[in-house]
Length: 563
Image 1 (cartoon, rainbow, N blue to C red):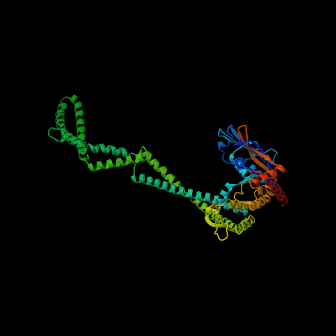
Image 2 (cartoon, one colour; image 1 turned 90 degrees about the vertical axis):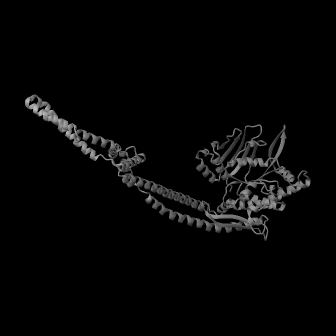
Image 3 (cartoon, rainbow, N blue to C red; image 1 turned 120 degrees about the horizontal axis):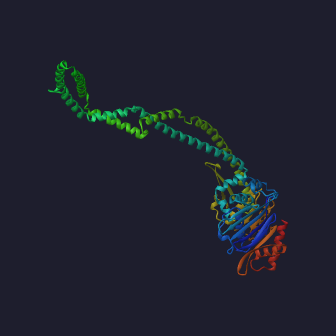
């Protein structure tokens, strides 16, 4: 059952490719050709369809833009259709549900474009979709295999644990967001407590000052009097004496006049008028003198009291600077603060509610994490057995493949760190894949993994780029068989220079370089039965192809058919 297939690849103005169209069949497709003929260029073009970064030097020198286009048959790959539906509903073709056309344009002006089924799309969507359609295995994949992070993914995919892991992840993010909220509320609570302390302090400060309306004005008056106390006292004293106490005072003289006036008024009644006036003047003078005497006794000369007043006025000023332009404003601010303090609630309730939730969520998270770990432990054994078995059949007999699982800090991937280790030779201790030097061994481990994973899922088109580097004749034949087997369930496209692999092809393309009117071009021929034999002979024999090599090539192709 084929899930998804690359039907046609068209490349235009890309590097030394002028224009190229390749059509692939289901099953096992081979691309061969001499080194430097442009096989890797074709693969670079395919990488662009996976959303890889484009560089300007990939555009053919005389041109403004390069184009890569691929047509896929999706019948049977519902996963990708779902993905397109989810990521970019507007990209669904009308009725042409079973085919998908992806096109990527890179241009010198810098703004490249992506089209999916003729609709403009984004690189993000392209790489999501591309990932579901194709996977390319080459030197670069050996590197991913050497990166420890991918080992856990491989294990989970193999064991069908992706669902459980997603469940764990959901719970993990819920736990994180709850924790963050709790911390936020605690922070708020502290901030509010600080705010509250400050307000209480302000209220107390105003309260303690006992500041009152009108107090300031009357003190300012007192201050003036106290400042001039001596002067006022002297005046009152002298004035009282001049009016009353001293010899020949004003009152004394008025009394003399009055006595005489009485007599005179007895003679002439007209004088009773000034007499009345004088009597009243005398009374007023006496009153004034008395008041002045009183006053001179009570005028304060009190420097201590003056200091007190100065201090108090300064305090009032300070409060006004802090809390408002007038005493009224200061007091009304206090009232406001007191009201706010009354209404101050903290989020205790929300907090305890969240803290209550946190426990169970953490518990669920731990349970899921533990379940995930247990499952991984179980699955690791199966994967170990499968990989060792595959490697054995790929000529790496007695290879020990070990999956090391260690507890790791909580992360969205669980609580495990997983690493693949291998000991290719008997008696050698296992070492990390990253430490394996031989390309041949890595290629085979890669192929083993791929074959194992291909059985469980992956509906992609599998492209193998020279995965046979570093392996010799007999081994190459085994790899060829394995790839051929893989191609029963997946469309496989393989770039190779090994005749032992190429002879298994369902379809064979040969890539060559040609110089036309001073320009180098890459051309691709789809080979028929006869030219396949020629190409295999070329791959076998190097420069000179003899009849003998040709017979050998024909024999190889036929025996591959039979097997």
